Length: 226
Image 1 (cartoon, helix red, strand yellow):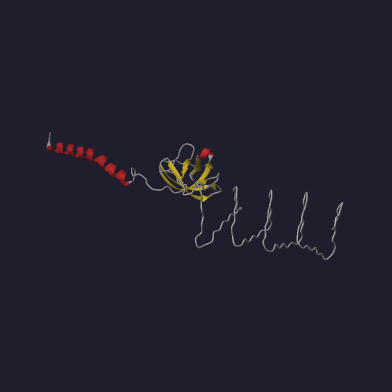
Image 2 (cartoon, rainbow, N blue to C red):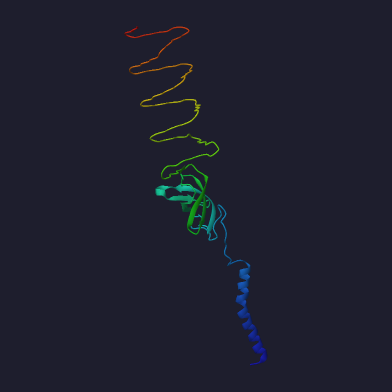
């Protein structure tokens, strides 16, 4: 074999050996095999594309909102902006019970998703502690407020205060029995007063005065004086 033929074959072999390497470098340069890593944007499709139903596949990593779609049996399911539905585990500092339609802040990777915040909620937060609980505002005032009201329940309610001030548009009181003891003056001022006693009414005083500017009416089957 001639030297010229050997050199030509060597050049051909060199081309065949180097061609895959050149193609690999070119393919890497285009980013064909570079993995996509990072938090998925809210509503963005995952790198793996979409399934046959037109819903984007689950993102590899996610941080964003999720709307609650199911709360049955303590299992919470949310829908991500891309249409994906996943089950989440509540991971809040306080025990919150989400309601349908709530928007939670969801974080997840692969198939593990957790709710770490509430962006918009109508659910309920239940704080239950064992034993006696004391709530004290040291060197300050304690304020309780609720947009829909404040409710207190218990077998007994004791209030100790130097002064009680109540301001309300309407007050309704219902008691089985009621005892009031006033050591000084009991003063009631009203535009009108209406008292109905189903059975017996008894009033006792050392001195009593009934004073009206106009008419006094006393009506009964028997009127005893003296």
